[in-house]
Amino acid sequence: STTVKKGPFGLRFRPVAPNTADALTVPEGYTQDVVIRWGDPLFKDSPRWSPTTQSGAAQRRQFGFNNDFLALLPLARGTQLLVANHEYTTEEMMYPGYDPANPTKEQVETSWAAHGLSVVTVQETRSGSLKPVVGHRLNRRFHTQSRFVLTGPVAGHALVRTKADPKGRTVLGTLNNCSGGTTPWGTWLTAEENFNQYFANAAQVSDPTTAQRLARYGVSGNATTRQWEKFDERFDLTVEPNEVNRFGWIVEIDPYDPTSTPRKRTALGRFKHEAAQPRITKDGRVAVYMGDDERFDYLYKFVSRDKVKKGTSRAAKRHNDTLLDHGTLYVARLTGDSPSAQIDGSGTLPKDGEFDGSGAWIPLVSGDRSFVQGFTAEEVLLFTRLAADQVGATKMDRPEDVEPSPVSGKVYVALTNNSNRGASGKAGPDEANPRKANKNGHVLELTERRNDSASTRFEWNLLLVCGDPSDPSTYFGGYDKSQVSPISCPDNVAFDRHGNLWISTDGNALGSNDGLFGVAVEGRDRGLTRQFLTVPFGAETCGPVVQRKRVLVCVQHPGEKDGATADAPASHWPDGGTSLPRPAIALVRRKDGGDIGA
Ligand code: FEO
Ligand code: CA
Ligand code: CA
Ligand code: CA
Image (cartoon, rainbow, N blue to C red; front, top):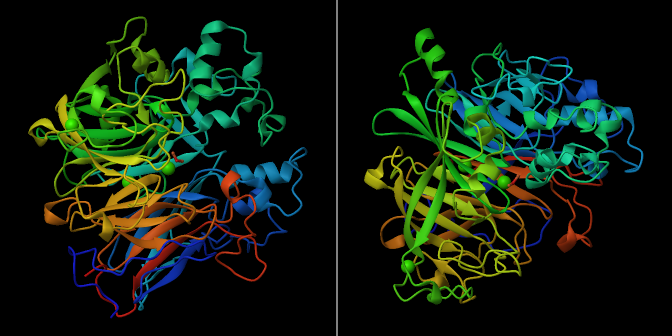
């Protein structure tokens, strides 16, 4: 049979087995389509993509590279608004014959255009798939030369002023957007992550304060890998020292308004932002949960000063456009409830049977008031990592996506891995990050006091300690480990309409391809983990969206080779034959048209 009757609604499918195929593999009874891929047209005048005719001008009219976060927003009947970001470019995989020592101007301009964001209207097809509406009036492409405005306390600050923008309010481009979120007022949030890699010549910066700030953000060395600094001096820190301070923010976009200018929201702090997912507080304000994806970095929350205005009136829109400019930024401190002697780094559960405890949200800055000694309010926002270092925040195992359950309000945090946990000179295991040299990562569940996202106190526990279930250091919410799929390196999280948690992975340390998993979080099935799909080798699985009849994933960097996959053959997904691999958004649905996992 094609369905599994056992288990909770939404997770009744036969799990996909781990594999290393150059394919997207889905459960029995399911089928798949590619919705849109790198190079596909968005506009009537978009040139047709081919590997040998790439240019900046063409790419600015086409879907970008390396899609990561994905949202589908409601539109008129039968259509939805697909919003995706394009995290980074891998030139060796994009340009046949690429010479990494001498990138051409055309290649660099193409890469500038392949970064950024896409807004694409999609139409539901008769078969249940989704198809881009080329030339729709809401379709947009944002890239490295598009206009973004800085808003909030840091806008106009001396440290964000540049020669091209002496007022410090207008930035060209958004870089390295990873995951994101959607707001209750109909906008889309996207997170600037590893912006450090685009800025050259940090090694030549002599001012000690500036050098320390750059170092804490991983901005280092001389020439960058892509050598953009050769073609635009704003990427050279010796020429334009402040350009780097204009990246590393949460960006808000109103995809329903094709004339809107995206905002970089400085009140949410600057770090290697992974994601930003809002939840309404009991008194009607908005909290935004965020992770800083670096080994030993932190979990954050922003709480707005003002309440969300309901409705779509012009007044409501104008008001909600200011919500993320005023509020309080917090960082998390987590305390375990078991004696530290019971946390030995092996992953063995402490005597109380759980990795769990309580926590506090420590305020860093609120409006123009800094809570961190030696930092002005603006400095806390610009150099948030350094401020958080001073207040005893808990060093986590790479906080990736963070998302509150729309059903229970509990907040789930993907902690992807940390090879350095417990290494000499580094923080050792603690109850919230309990394994030394954490290869497979874990998933934390956080419950705000009174279930109110404005609360400054919370309880937490680990839902999953990932890996092969036969590994004694793993934990699956107390569920029978003989009945779960192996899972490694959780990255993005999302929910289905039943409240099940869906987790996509990046960097599977178990030797198989990455994939997407459904996990039950409540009741007797808590911890039940089933693999729904695997992506082609070398790819990470991103942006999961689970609708009633569709699951969509962003297949990012198929065929990309790193240490573990250096000997893998070339990927030809999704076009097959001898084609270049192309990052793409894939859609999975049931062959019989039924509900996902029902
Ligand atoms: Fe872009 Fe933290 O993953
Ligand atoms: Ca405990
Ligand atoms: Ca990620
Ligand atoms: Ca998410």
